Image 1: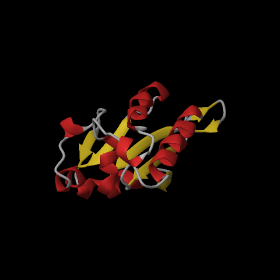
Image 2: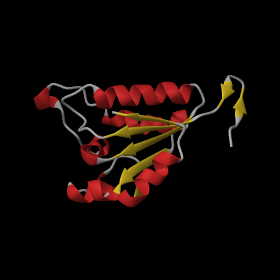
Image 3: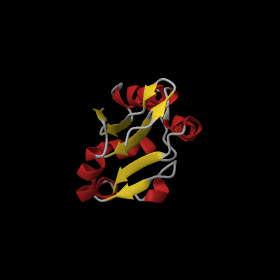
Image 4: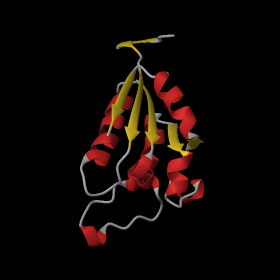
Length: 127
């Protein structure tokens, strides 16, 4: 059901993050786009799969690669009412990570449920 708000119809957006946090601009651009969408009162979710799960890993150090460490910015998502963070269980497991290795609270979902989650959205953006 679509909900009305002052600026129009609220849409359900999901941002799929597939890439490692450093080496490309995609992860940072995804985060910036999420914050913009949330600022316009859209229903925003984020899904981390494949190497994208590394974006949420605690204790990242970027000094040796001379990239800005933006991982701590994920903690600010809650201030923008972005609270629907999903991580694919198999992606975590394949990379030797567990939920306690992540900086923020997430909902871990099975790979078989990913397409169901995506089907519930109005807009899907993949980074």
